[in-house]
Amino acid sequence: MPNVPALPRESLAKFEPFFEIAEQMMGGFVPNSLFTIGHRPEILEAFMMLAGAINGPGQIDAGTKQLVAYVASTAAGCRYCQAHTSAHASHAGVSAEKVEHAFEFETHPVFSDAERAALRLARDSALVPNLVEPGHFDELRKHFDNAQIVELVAVCSLFGFLNRWNDTMSTELESVPRSFAEQHLGASGWEIGKHR
Image (cartoon, rainbow, N blue to C red; front, side, top):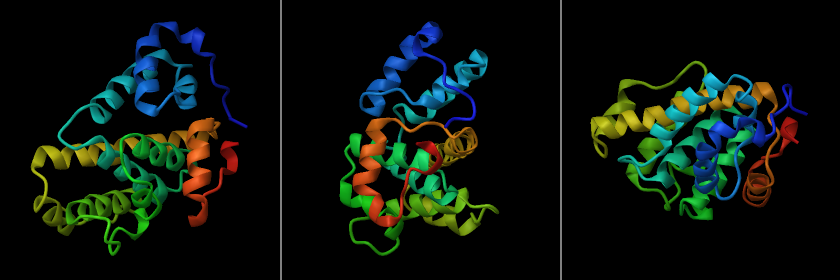
């Protein structure tokens, strides 16, 4: 059960254009976390602008960004965000095989060297203490320019916020990402936990 109840969507009518964009990006639903953040509309507005800038069109494709977000969320232990990012990655065209083997990225043949560098950054930046070292950036620079690296770090950082938010609030998981996670992540130990 959520620690703070989500507001009804209609009570946040001024954000409806943002919710419609989120619904399209997420594959047919609006994350319940937005309806909780909405208790402070000014925070929701700022968050939506930041999330839109990071998750919107950029120099890194949407599928790679969601794989990065998934690995970071898994390393941080947020089951809500694991379900969201894995489902969102699939919606963005990432194969189920890549999602299911995301934590084997170092050796699984389905991943490119560029993806390995990005996912290594995601995993190690989400840990406490942070394990990112200069070598991470040496590997990233073989595949990405500075603007792309900033975009990857921004994705990791955005999900640092979302991991803390959703784990602390025990945000209720929506049916679309829950179904995807149960089907594709269960074998690796994913369970809904407090997000029921």
